[in-house]
Length: 440
Image 1 (cartoon, rainbow, N blue to C red):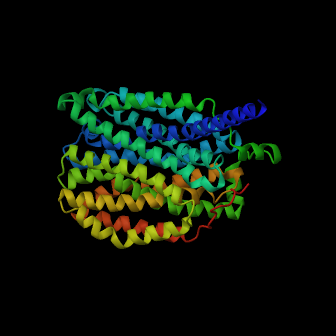
Image 2 (image 1 turned 90 degrees about the vertical axis):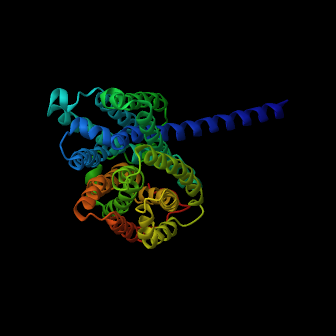
Image 3 (image 1 turned 60 degrees about the vertical axis):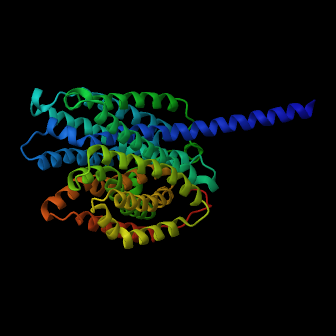
């Protein structure tokens, strides 16, 4: 009888642990899905938003103004990183993640309600800038915070796999965003699309944030944060700690370099690519979004596969091999992308997606391992978001301008290769922490 009871208790404990683990992973990562869906839907609907909010005789100029606002939201990310980094390092990771979702839900809903330039004139793009800035603040604390939250809960031997769920759910969010844009374009007539159809995507995004919030209400705080609360107390001014600690400052600079490469590659492959194919290669809107949706789906699964593999292989080695391969083959692959041939576009995107999915999980874990618990949230968020803001967020604008100025469809390849080289250089300087506990 006692053996039966012991067996039952063991099963119940295992069941509770599995439920707790699933809640931690889902609660930590789900917000990232909502954040990236809302943050990037704007980019996918740029061809609709540009004539509505930035009407000019020159379509290229309208598109560049639209992407300027897109870049502005990225410049807000470092300030969001500082804000939510302070909350996360002083008040707790769970609290920071909860408030980041609230800050995304509100402006997303109001973008969906915003009158166009035709109705209220210059106030329309001005308000759009404000709402996109608030979205940028929210995004600045979400993905890095979610990665830290999961890393500080994860078993040492499964850290990369757990953390890889963050870029994977971000990819799902981007995938849903791309699919939603595709559905909106195909479901509504031209008149409906430019009248009110585009708004549906933003209203759905606000609702998605509210659903995600319900999962984060009862998330437990991380053991690493609880430990410093008890032993040393939390850091009231984590930014000052970064400046004063040479190791933390070095980590922040390395994260900035690696995140710059991350941001540019991500923007080119999955955010700007549909616009490139539509406007530069004369691929239809539907086909361009179908290509993007398909490879985002592949990207999502591959991130988890290589997140698992990276727990058994040196992450620095994976980053070095990936960046070296991309540096060699980037230009030939962009020749295929510029060919106009559908099968060549699919082949080139397939190779680039495969290589980039190896890069992402290894890079994310290397970056968060560069900091101690006291300033991990602020250090990672600041360095990561500065890289994304200065180089990642400006990529669509710079690349569109490069093509306009040079009339060369292959000029984006050179920009791509430049930041692959930056990623390679920074990867060589990270310490290999595989199999070790996070620094306290």
